[in-house]
Length: 291
Image (cartoon, rainbow, N blue to C red; front, side, top):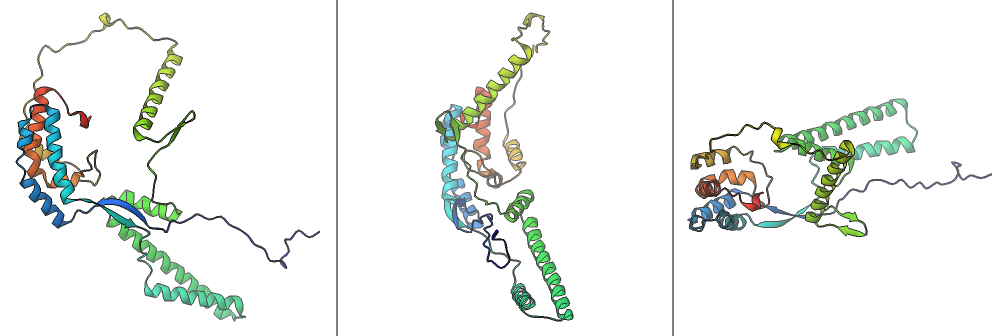
């Protein structure tokens, strides 16, 4: 019986491996250099903020502030398309390439020719030294990458994912299948998750209690405060202090403005921000877009 497993027959083995994404991809980013920052300061300095001070409603006041601020922000730091791909491996030097070429040559000679014991020992020793040099070079590059990064935890995980062969391109759009309908809209997806968790809590409550308990509110002793609470107005110094206490990270909110940019330009925007805060306190209304 011929099972086709003899070493006299040529065998073909297919081994599935992880695919490495070597293709270039495009991302949107802003360039925060010194020239752009100075232009941003100049544009902010030209604004009088009269549109903000002239509004009486907090919604219109905040909208006027954001319109003027985002105009300067987008003009000084426009969004540009950047081509990204696998970065150059800095640990590969000319010496490493020469050692690699010599290692392949020695390995080929070992397999194709009959060598003496001392030559084989030399090849094994050279192989150990070569591996140790490669490991130290990679370690040196990874240490430099982590130490030079602002977010060291993020940089560490990037290196781990790189070694595991995971792609850095993540599809952030979540697609849900509700019955026969596929939902990919982020707002609709968030509403579905919220509804699910709210209904789940209600079901668990009903199962544990058997029925909703009705409380007699008249038996509860609640201490009331006879005094009225007053909120003092905010000063420009307080606004500046709060802004400067921000972490200064590159993360942003709905407007795409990063914390470190706000910290840098606080001198130009603390007065309109102070006016917006005081108007919000006086009217008891918080800007809807920030909720």
